[in-house]
Amino acid sequence: MNAPLHARTRLADGISVANATVTYRNGHTALRDASFQIPTGTITALVGVNGSGKSTLFKAIMGFVRVSRGEITILGQPVEKALKQNLVAYVPQSEDVDWNFPVLVEDVVMMGRYGHMNFMRIASARDHAAVDKALERVGMSAMRKRQIGELSGGQRKRVFLARALAQDGRVILLDEPFTGVDVQTEGAIIELLRGLRDEGRVMLVSTHNLGSVPEFCDRAVLLNRTVLAYGPTRETFTRANLEKTFGGVLRHVVLDPAAGGGGTIDILSDDESPLLAQAESAEAQR
Ligand SMILES: Nc1ncnc2c1ncn2[C@@H]1O[C@H](COP(=O)(O)OP(=O)(O)OP(=O)(O)O)[C@@H](O)[C@H]1O
Image 1: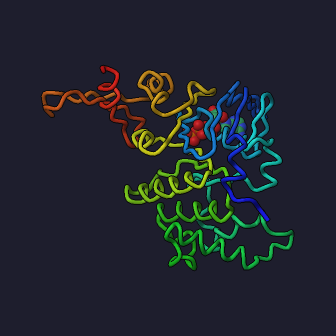
Image 2: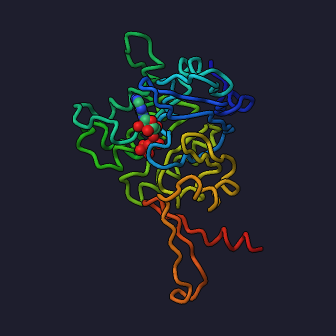
Image 3: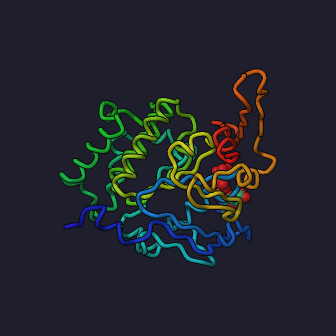
């Protein structure tokens, strides 16, 4: 029988990436010498411009692409071993899913159990129970018999989150989970991630919603073909680091203090949810 989750993860590291380099077959090096560590029981944001290597990093952690140099370990184990043990669950970007594929919500969630089944893929009572629980946790039980193509953007995200929950992954990678979802769904997803953090899991979340990062991410990894900064969000998510990461792509708006009457508010924006930098500058002045 498996040990409780917290007992199994407590001693091992979360995700450790050491000098990882990924070069695609066409010779393009998407990641060079990338290094960072994430402990268990944390939510880490992965931010960077389009093409900075976020998806490549996810693929490397999932073993879909090999690192040509360096090393990645998951809960203290090499990627291949971690994958065999179903330690890593992945919530894909919506664009990476064929929504016309005729499959029911509950069948997508059951896919999370495949790694726990034998080669015949016959679901046990335990598999069914895990699917029921996962659907309930994301509030999608009532829609379990619906085709995935019939769902809204937010509902689709919930279904893939449920798949990750059914898998019971200790490490959960989320590729832009807030794109195309309303504020209420974003809040529900954040609440769910907080619950998973409290269970001792590790979450790495790629996002362009800079504004929500300080709200729910303990840590951040700033990427631009290598790791430019990583660590606690408070120390990492500074204007200087963000400007280095996003360069000209980052829009920097300073609201007129006279108009609001409440002092300067800086808005750093990578287009979606902007980061209000007022608190940071006030703190820096102390
Ligand atoms: N299979 C591939 N073969 C060759 N080059 C690739 C491949 N996949 C990605 N790349 C290139 O590697 C770089 C990083 O791509 P990646 O998809 O990791 O970026 P990203 O940060 O996830 O971008 P986005 O925010 O747009 O999702 C890009 O220049 C991309 O064109």
